[in-house]
Length: 242
Ligand code: F6R
Image 1 (cartoon, rainbow, N blue to C red):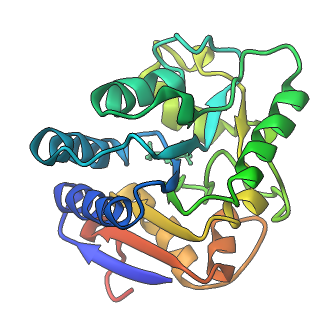
Image 2 (cartoon, rainbow, N blue to C red):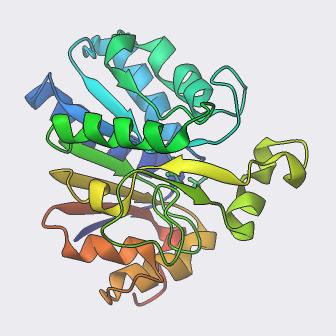
């Protein structure tokens, strides 16, 4: 795992966008795995700014999002479909037929998980997976204890994850209890991984990840087994001396 430490969230967002743009320019048909949440917002902002300035084309790109809440309509303002439309897809020239996000609002969730996982497999696992990390080490919504072999599945969100995401809802009761997430085994099939870590609240998680100890109780630790991982972290997220 390569670690790049930058000064603050602003720099992290610039560096992450630069990293992704370099890959897009090198491979205009790239398949990207995308994350939502607070951390990548600035990265998407920079991708959109670049699009406005340089018209980097997204026309031939395919994207797969990591996760979606169960029970929210895709048009719900807190759905990850809506997040992606608002932060990226509606603002660049991406072909929406090449945009994939699990649908958490179907009656047969198992079937949806299988369908989604197969779509990713058909794309060879993807070229670059963008990730954030939860305080408990979750990646996607793979909570502690998730099998390292897992494929796309329905997961019960932990209280700490629901609390962290309650900031986007009126109250914690409104935060869905379940989500569909791409599994750890599927994430590992991406040829390359870019993990973004920002802020003091992620310090303990980052230190644990960098310790290199691989443990199913800390899902992100699986990344130590991947041959091509870059971590961009800001100074607040990096422990002194670590
Ligand atoms: C979201 C996702 C999650 C987040 C993680 C960190 O698609 O996959 O693993 O990356 O919960 O969220 P933030 O960035 O809000 O701290």
